[in-house]
Length: 327
Image 1 (cartoon, rainbow, N blue to C red):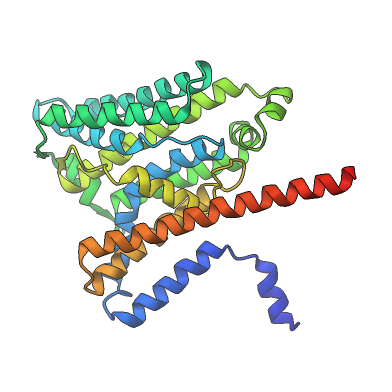
Image 2 (image 1 turned 180 degrees about the vertical axis):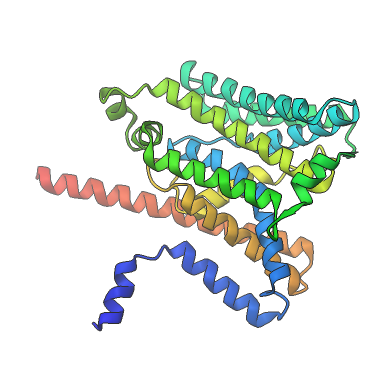
């Protein structure tokens, strides 16, 4: 093997990054408008809300659980922001209420799962249904417009050529990556996902960590809802409908396993970009929106199935190794 080949192999480039690059190259060849500063900026901007939703969910899945209620929290938050702004409340107070609501929903979910030992799927489905319904009831099923210069600036203003919302998401992402990789809390999340029993023996406060992770999941979903309200100057009760599935897909595509204990937010960033690159490329190729959903859905389901099958294969291989050692 040549020196260059050895260096390339030593880089250990994530497969998802290669996938992102190949998609960019493919769509750039297929449409000259894809690889332009305008379109790349749109991809980054459109990635923000999905990445926000996915970051909190990444921690939940790292623990071997799931939280499909995040999409409903996104919708409920966007609606609450619109309704409260129209009632004349000050923007800081509205944002505080919206964030508190998301954190409270996540905390309640965490208590039900971690402390009261409810099945996390039952909790997630119930929470999803409740807040999806509340979002519809609050606005009678219609989209509520927002008139606020402050919120409009957050969603559509620019600093140094980048949208303000992109700067906000970059800072939050770097913060969460630091917490994930350099704090006891981040270590505890991985430990619980790897083996809850071992984590308990090691002194990890499993219940406390689980509740905190669910709280962060709800909090980040509410931040995503705020971002959508700012970007669209409206609050729609159905805006978060696809976010639960897409966020889960971004997390798993990024390398975080449903089994827990493996992956992280770095991969989720790349998984989010892949989904948004795919959506942008298909749109520029003139593929109908209905077909875009079908194609993206097929890609997502395929990647999730591959992840599950791969994990099962690894588990079976591990059991065989243990059996050989015992024999």
